Image: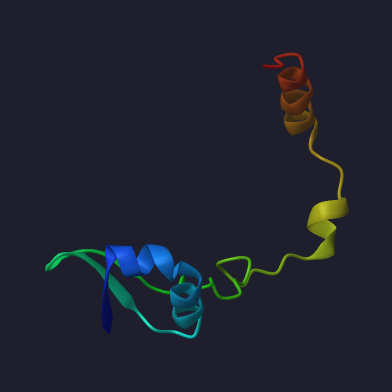
Amino acid sequence: MTTVKVQYAKTHLSALLARVEDGEEIVIARGSQQVAKLMPLRRPGQRNLGFVDLHFPESVFFEPLPEDELAAWEADEGRKP
């Protein structure tokens, strides 16, 4: 890990960022006091959607709703936020 002074970091920021993009971590110090660290951002990996492997038969989605459930949905339509 490289340590640079604030003035050097201000003058050479583009070059320091290029080094960080290559995976290097750079500490910025004010005098002998370390105050900040430049480090590469970890790009989030690809996420898989879903948490559980569930399978439903197609009939579940294509059967008509029972009358009481259909009535509950229709009654809820009248209460718009």
